[in-house]
Length: 275
Image (cartoon, helix red, strand yellow):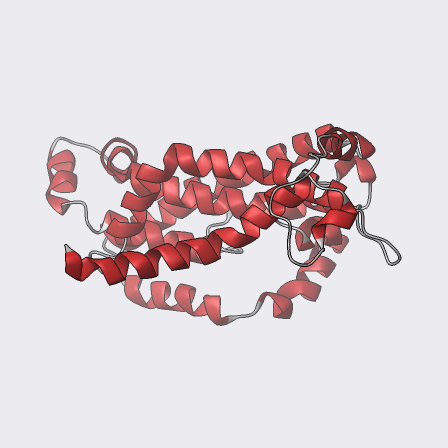
């Protein structure tokens, strides 16, 4: 037990360093702008500026931004989980010629920077007449290899490989098709990995700023990330409103993680057991 004390101290120090920006965000959300940057820092607001939240969330139509973000996030999560699961099932449970080669080519696409495909992708959506719609932000999620889908396919494939193949063979003997094996055998046993992909996709979509900034022009279609940027301008930044709105925006992500953390940790741990 004593031998682990230095390890616990190091982990606690790392956790404290990680939590410091979040603590700074929360305390600043309850402060006036003049209090935030005084030296030495004032960690406990005095007085508490509760009006930051009400005024920040009413200064912009955050209710509409929240609904837009939820719609995009739900569509993206559903598309990513479904198509990445199907692709991972094919790469892990089905035997076909060139499977490993195709999977290697798919993984190699991770090395391609997002900036390289940014302009061609924008031109493509422009030619399709899909600018100022949610199509560029949601449709790619229904193709497993798009965006961060490659990483999700890899995570799900690694988890699917940990499931005994004898279960598939027993189902095939009973007359099940590969599609039925996928839905009735593999997916019910893969909840931890699916939760990991769900959390990753939800957080990525929820925090996405560049995508909505590029493709959305109508203010009624803005997402929360664009709404937060409205508190910053060339000449002035409304720090109190920005911090309060930021704290409100990240609250759903924190709640989602704490609700699903047991499955998240299990999924991340098991995805690297077998390759």
